[in-house]
Length: 91
Image (tube, rainbow, N blue to C red):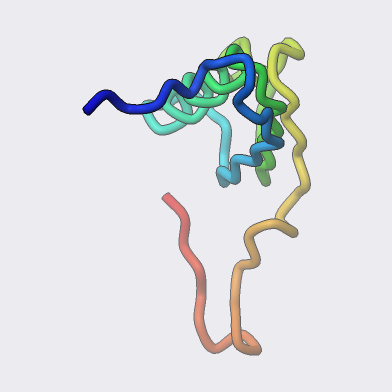
């Protein structure tokens, strides 16, 4: 049985948000950007929230306006939870 097409004109367009701690240059960042670009090419609205993006050390799509990338400091990913009892680490 064939899978339903996700690119049909009647498919609803979605607002999709990606969260990623640091949009530098690496494999995980490339995967996030490629996924976002593929979904955007299908007509979806994509927003990427990150806590850090260095314009001198990131992929072109993360800085040239191809994708809506919003840097929100460290507020997206808190350093601690539960009153500072637990630290949250991101690679």
